[in-house]
Length: 313
Image (cartoon, rainbow, N blue to C red; front, side, top):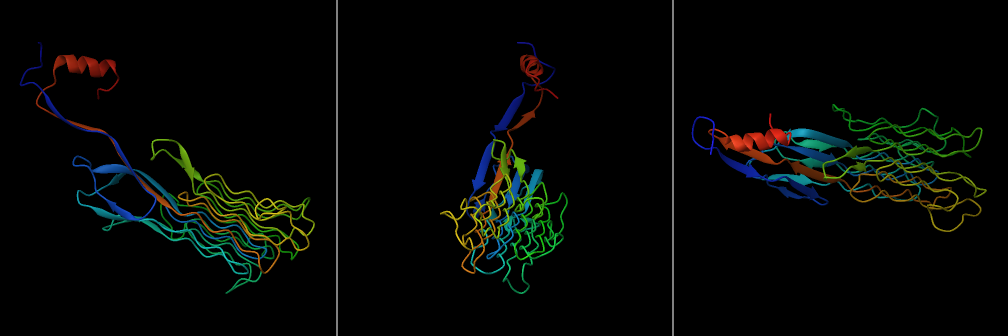
C-alpha cells in the first residue's frame, strides 16, 4: 500500500455536538473542543399594559467561533418579563454563557403604557428597546443594543402616535427597529421588529422578534401590531390577541412572546385591566464542530479520497 514517506497516519476525531439550554444549567465541552458557535438570546420584555407599546426582544448574540474552556461553565437562561395591567412592561432578564469573560445578552426592554410609571408611555431600553405607548410621540421608542456590544444585539422600539386615541409602537427586534404607530391615513399599530436567523441548532431558526403595539380600538376594527418574526407577539386589537371580539373600550391583553425565542410581548388594549403580554424566555445553544486531529503522514488513498470529496485543505 503506497504511503507518503514516514509512518502511517493516525487520527483522533470528535463528532459535532449541539447542546441546547432552554433552562439554566452547566455546559461541559468535548475533550477536543476549543471554540464553538455559541448563540445567546435573552428573555424578551413584557408589553405595556393599558394602550401599550410592544416589548423589545431579548438581546441576540451569535458568535461563530467563541472560545470555550475545558472546564464546566455555568449557563443562565433569562426569563421573559411578566405582563401586567396598567403599567409599563417589565424588562426581560439576561442570558449568560460562561463565567470568566462571559458572553451576555441583555433582556428586552418593556413597552410603555398610558398609566405607567415612573413615566407614562415610556418604554425601557434593553437588548432591543420597547415600543412607546400611544400618547408618546413618534420618537418615543426606547433604544436597543443597551449596553452596546459589537455586533449589535438588537434595535430600538417604535414610537406612539402622540394621541390619546392612537396606537402603540412596536418593540425592536434583533435585525430591525420596531415600527412607529400611525393615525393617518389609517390607524395602524406598530409591528414588532424582525428577529435574526441562526443555524446554531443545526437548522435555520429565527429568534428575538419584537412585540406588536396595542390599540385604542374603540370601534373594534383596528388590529394590533404584528409580532416580529422570531417569537414576537401580537398587540391587542380587534379581538385577535386578547380573546373575544372587543366592545366599548376594547379591553384585552397583548399576546405573549414565544418561549425560548426571546420574543417581545404584545401591547395591551384600552382599559386599566388590559395587561401587556409576557416576554418569551431566552435560549443558549452551543454547536461544537466535528474535529479531526492527525499525526505523522497521510495514507495516499486517504489523501485522494479527501481531495475528491472536497475535504482537503
